Image (cartoon, rainbow, N blue to C red; front, side, top):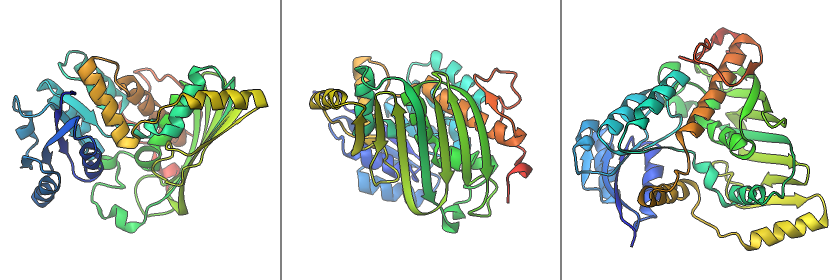
Length: 362
């Protein structure tokens, strides 16, 4: 029988989605505590999820013997200090995206994690959709061939009421706009499928809402493997959609999920260059075993990692690579120049990616 791990969820916005996922895995997790600055939210969530502890004080969760994992779902600007406090207390940590607000902060967290007793698991739940996992299976079997071109579309809608939450749409608290808060998951999939990024050129605009940060983006990317990619983002779509398309020499792969926030989930479309490749795809899929998707899929894999000492499903290196792409996007938009990766510690945006916003605001 698997060991149940006691988890505390901190921040009851997106944290409610995390709680829903943990609740589907009762054999793996006990929802032990909930934490939010809003006492009413704590009380309500504790009742809904039968949590023994409801608190507005993060420090209450750090006492020995209370929980195994603290899951941080607070506004992005708070992530680094909360992560470091939890690691210092010897706890395992799960942290929502973005991990933190700069490459400098990310490297400080990497240093803290090296000497910590617990592990740190960044959230990238889109990776665990069964459609995307089928693509990874085909790659592992060497069936895709040479990567040519990837197109990633994140077409969502955010209206004025979304920004009624005080920390949203502001550089100081949300740390960025659609490239950071919304499209970061889809953009992570680009590297998950095609590896490291070589260079980035970005155009950003604020056209949908009167906010500080960007809500539209058009980005071109050169991958280290030689393939090219385009990343298109808007928060002004009348019909929400996330679409991922990967063109290889031996097949074309496209997400077909109609759920804008779960593009990695089935169904996906796979078309081989020849009938023989189509037959090999069908044979590979006959061996495929579906697993839990989205947050539940990542949490199930985190549990397996912590209880069997196997590798984490998403690593700090993955989270850092995502932040490096974010940094390059904002630096390119601010300077109107392409940016080559990797970015060294003396790069002008290493300690902060906040750009000269005059070049792309309304």
